[in-house]
Image (cartoon, rainbow, N blue to C red; front, side, top):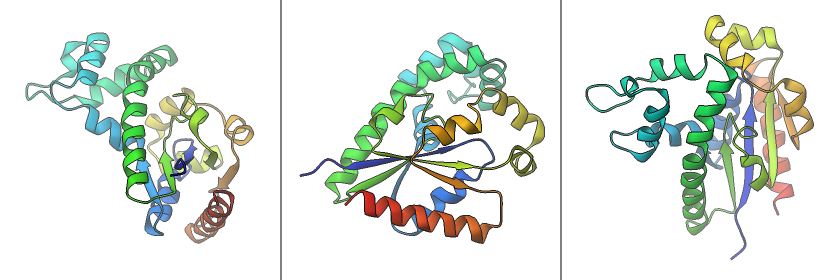
Length: 197
């Protein structure tokens, strides 16, 4: 059995990666979402949650054992150092879970899996991707799409657009209408299928 091909899908906050990811899924491609993996890792008494709370404070765990996401976000995104620290704890757990899911997808007969990961490069996951697709948009458009204060905080801790462009095989620009980004995504899907044959 040939190894499953992994396509990394990434982009900056507010660029429209979720729209592209949803299009891929709607058109039958297997999409694994890193954010969903993280949500599932933060279950009460999980090793990941214990590791995170050991660094960012036991008070990020609520009385019911679940994580206080706003409090963790406030602390983790307060500086680049804290963001890096959180990522260094969580990314190995996420990568392990992704690999298990990719193996299952291969068992289910899939030949290509899309790894929807906003922190693809920061986590080092780009090294095991066969192809990388980045979604970009102008800063002012990204700011319009998301809450300004939250966006500025997260965007300041992210890689810039030029980095995504120079490290990707395919770039989907999302500066226009939903129809145009869907057309660009359709072309990306065709390119992915052609390259992965």
